Amino acid sequence: MDPAFWHDRVVREAVSAWELGIVVRLFRKHTGLSQAAVARLVNIDQAEVSRLERGLKGVRDRRQLLQWAEALGVPVELTGPLPTARPESQERGYEDRGGDGGVADSTGYLALSEGPGQLLLPGGRNIATTALPVLALPAVSFHGNGLRLATGRDTDAWSRMPMRALIVASRVVEGRKRHFALDARWGVSERPAGAKVDVPVAYELDDLTYGILWAVAGFDAALLGDDGALHDLLPLTTRAHEGPDTLRDALGQRELTDGSRMLLGSETCARYILSQRDRLGGEPVFWTREQRGEEAATWLFFKHKLDYLRRTAPGRPGSGSGRAFCVPSAAVSTSPSYERVLLFLAMALMESCGVRTWLTDDSSYEQTDGFVLVPGHGAIIATWVRSEGASNVALTARPHTLRSFAEVTAHASHHSVTGSQTPEHRLAATAEYLELDRAWLARRCRQLALEGTARLASPRSRHLSVDGLDTACRYVADQFGAVPAQQIPTR
Image (cartoon, rainbow, N blue to C red; front, side, top):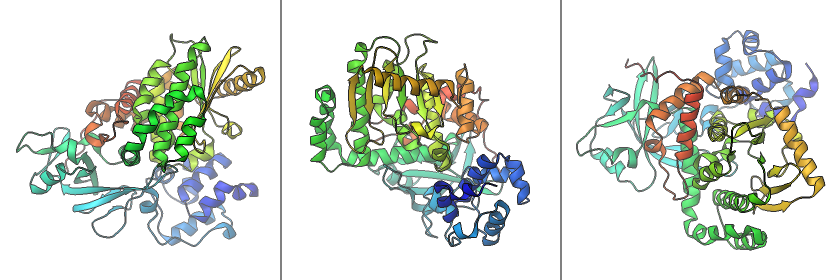
């Protein structure tokens, strides 16, 4: 074992925090060992290693933590104090209050106490921490593809709550309590008077639905909090061709949430590209800076993004146009699984529009500006992701810049870790690289494609939509040939 491995910054931080799933993932990547081989080191099943790496299982027993450290050869001087709090509640943001809050059970899935409580969604790099009111009730029966709840004054009151809230049906299946969430307002209030409430099986709380709620609730809170300011500032995004100073000066006079700055930056770049693309001619290739689900979720939920994506899609199949991502392995290993699901779905949405995706893991390219390139003709520089404020846009035909951009896209397309000629195989390779289970993605996207996501996470902000998300789910289900969604067991 190369001692330098343990002194890598990402590895050291994970070891110090006892983030065992991250440590094991990085250890396997470095050594080339399979999950089964690692499992044999500590005498457990391969499935347990898989669950650990995906964040679905946590190790709390101090003896087991020390056993893992010894088996992997972790230097003692790098380890921090043994944790005493539940890591699942910290990692997933499930509030652990021992009472009416949401906590994570021993398998890493959400557990909610019956009655009113709240679900604490953790802050990201831009999305602020959000708390959702939750009314958790036991399901009285299993009806078709849903769990039936008894209605009463509580459910009626929650359906009239103006803020985002969830009604959650709980049912013990195979010895584990499972939870199925419904938007209290849109999922309940639309039923006929006196009708029972059925919570779709598709809305089971897991990495997919948790990620959706995390992103929608976070963006909603940010954009609604700045709605008046956005009304004044969004028209300025059409004037990017006049130079960046107008919007930058206006932003400097406003206290905005990071989510609102993401929207303004994205709108500015999209509008500038659409206004200048005819000057490039030909079929362009795109370089994008999204590395994590938080950034990529803008494609799924920002209303203008789906229209922009469709308007910039290739005019003919096989044109050579595509969109390249730089997602180093460190970004994968340090991202929670629900964020990786969002990144995967964003790439699936692009493929659904005929946009071929490439993914390079070469971290030397991660600071490259976002751009649109027609080789030999010109390029549009358009950067808002991790731009530290206002977006950067420009039109250029400088030979040196064009050559540099051409080298970047050539490397991404020729050395893509998801390289394939078919969308299905590119998506499968993307799922594997992001360490997501393809069969699970196929089944869950199929369920959500049939049900739709509006009754789970209907946006409140006028700038958001779930159309992109629904499109991505349908496309994944179609490409992966998902079998019809199965009902969960009733006992």
